[in-house]
Image (cartoon, rainbow, N blue to C red; front, side, top):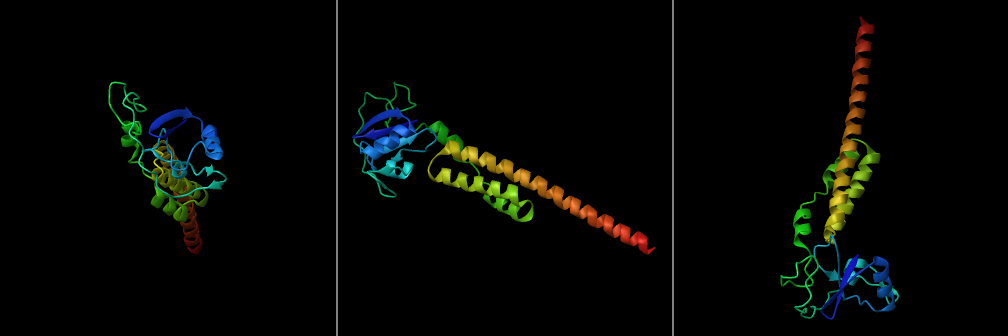
Length: 182
């Protein structure tokens, strides 16, 4: 579910499809601020969504500063007794997820040295982790980081098993050749 702010007023939640339709019909501007759970902070609709606005896809640009919020509406995730900006994201989610590891160097090494197929999966999830971190989508970054780690360990396990089998075949072949020579 998405939240959006127009003229200093926070609105929502709305579904992604509804937000996309708003962008298409012009009721959501590229410079309007949007937020969903997992994002570090509010961002302009053009940066956070990549939706089409009035028929063309918009990339880049900066949003003007939002108007001052009304004191009556508490921000999302804040108790009603606290004065907070309506544009503030819940801080507990951000602090817990900013340290997500992407495992990219390990995934690449595993792909080269161990098992290509599972290594590629680990690399893809590692790159997705970095992308989600850049967009402030900490929940997705956490999920992709966890999957990258799982795929890396599968890569390492399969690669280790493969090289152990190859090594044991070489040892057996050498031992067999030595015993035949005697």
